[in-house]
Length: 246
Image (cartoon, rainbow, N blue to C red; front, side, top):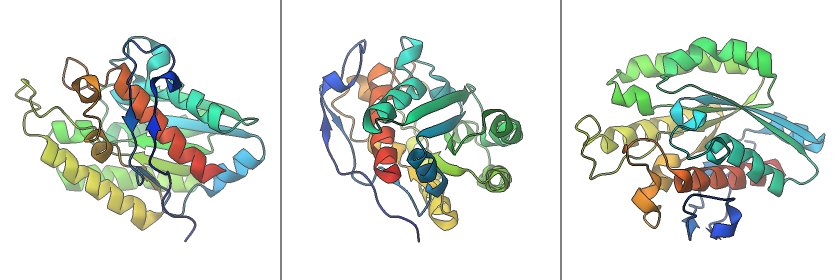
């Protein structure tokens, strides 16, 4: 095995986040939020060589929908967070998120996006839209395994990001009562990551600890993250990845 659990729990104060519309006063991070599962070897070698390229794939939360400005979405904040934690390393995070995308659609374009971006690490955020569209689990994980074959052939490291949590008090009937299914998806992603050696960020479970953020880090549409939610997610990913890459 090539690694274990990352990230000591900590409290991140508002100044860590640049120019948020409403800066969170505290952002609690779970000690097991990012788990390497023995992965990240290629990315560690890239960091040792002084440069790291990350390709971020997924749906609207990778794209940054809900952020008040583009620079306050997940990808630019992750890039900034890694640059702070890995001084002297040239960090590039490529945003290839497309709102509404399912695991099938991500797998369909993985090969060409990897060829275009030549990343060391691919972040694959998945599961939310699949659950909201009531796709059968067998279909979702068939698409995942198709994507896995592409990722493994490319020789890249992988960080899986599980679904987001929805507000329990949502008024949207399409979202109401969906958290148990999203939680099931998060558990299956964690099991797959451990089985095949992909790193995993446990976003769903971590969001349960964002009670101090306005609307739990979710915007008024009860789906997309707000600025504070993106900041907390990006800082957690940056902290966990940096710990595993040093």
